[in-house]
Length: 355
Picture 1: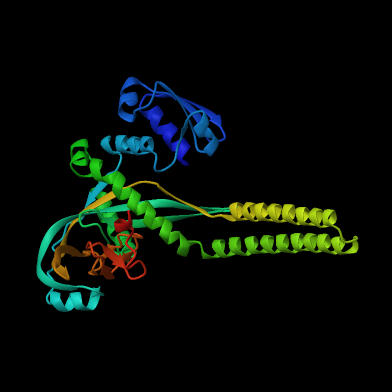
Picture 2 (picture 1 turned 90 degrees about the vertical axis):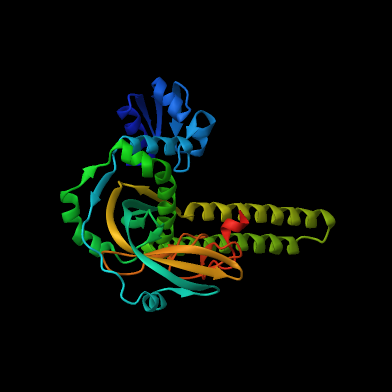
């Protein structure tokens, strides 16, 4: 389901009247309570193309109206939650465990303590799409620890094995529980997860990206040959004519016109083969359990802060921190001058500090 169909379906569930005009466009008559909640008028026109913004509202995943509709769904308890029970053994040698799993590039850290704490994971299947002159799709599942904002790498198979037991006791999250945790934080967390998914797309669609690159280079080479031949023909024709200022000016004018047209065609080809990456959540499962959490003090120069590093209860691995700049999960990182955790590829260019 694309974003326009999803938006229309949710609006109808909430009592709105929807008319689908085709081509990704629809008009909606909103009830008064939705008008106030979403800050929209009684009758609104929506679309997904740039020209739709001229006559109505443009829908995309960063539109606050879409975020508001997502919050309405969350408040209605449309996200399932499940619990996994079981005693978590403490790490026998936490300092040695950290030394094996966690690498500090430009800071030092000190183990403080370990605690058994409740943690909450979001299991989010996403429809990952890469769209150019062609389109390809894939289902990608991301697991995110919403308690500590860490990522349990390599836990997918362990999670699949544990889910039947957890889902046997699954319940629908109540509005009270949602407002205490998810209603405020879920849109921001989903935005981070979608950014992670877009990063994964570079690895998920290697053949699609290579094929798109090959076709673009082929078309650019054809353009170069075609307009190169035109330029040579203009120059050849100019040499055959008697020398004169008027003839030279015409040749220069034709060459300039050919150059401008060539540059426009190049941009058209690049636009044609530009790859747009989309990640749409298909659902959310909140999985609650207890985990060993290592409390670590990190220091760079004179600045100190505390980190919580959970040991994933399903596979016993240390969970990865997210790079503040690119949202890539890593256990080998750096700190910028303002103590943002960065992967080695992003350091020292911190996007948070740049604003």
